[in-house]
Amino acid sequence: MVKNEMKNQIRRLRFENGEMTQQQLADKVGVTRQTILAIEAGKYAPSLPLAFRIARTFDVPIEQVFQYQDK
Amino acid sequence: MNKTQKGALFSLVNFLLLIIFSIHSIKIIRNIFSFGGYPNALKIVLFWAFLIFGFMGLSAFLLYRKKQSCAEVGSDERDGLIKKRAVLVCFISVWILLISSYAVLWRIVGLDGSIPICILPLIYLGVFFAAMLVYNVTVLVQYGWGGKDGEK
Image 1 (spheres, rainbow over the protein chains, first blue to last red):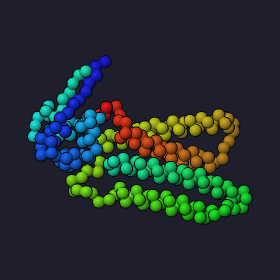
Image 2 (cartoon, rainbow over the protein chains, first blue to last red):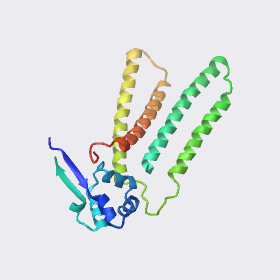
Image 3 (tube, each protein chain N blue to C red):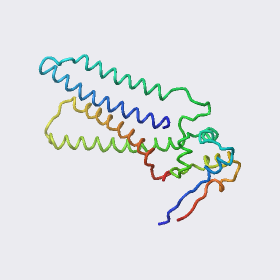
């Protein structure tokens, strides 16, 4: 069975964007801080619209925020 | 801890308090009918009422307090997913509890036996309490451990 894993660069991007806090990012994309925390920790895979909103907040393509890897 | 998680935790504690209070009340009522009284019955009932309503008030205050920022979100897609899954688990548990309680009654009373009419609403009440407990525990477990789809 193929295992998959989704990695993300949210933490790095936050710090590159003026050390944005999780709460600030959450407010900008319209979710709770706990959801940002869960996404960063890889415990929750966001929906496609939310993934796009996060990417647009950092002004980068979605592939730079989320990477999908087959294991 | 977000609003949904807090809500589930407060509901769980409130339902547990209500269950303990109900058990205690049954004991008090049984004693009143059997022995004609119960020492400090009114004080005990008032204590429980104060405890339950006090906790409910505290829960409401903490849940609906003023937001830290106007952009702060109460619940989002993850909370929705968690609630949806909890409702499904709750629905399944209601069916399991109802069928198993009828099966137990059937086993005890038999096909030709009869039960007092008050048993039926008591079963529904018990199933309702159990379903609420299952719902709140499922919500809390999902925040703590994570589920399968959408979460690791």
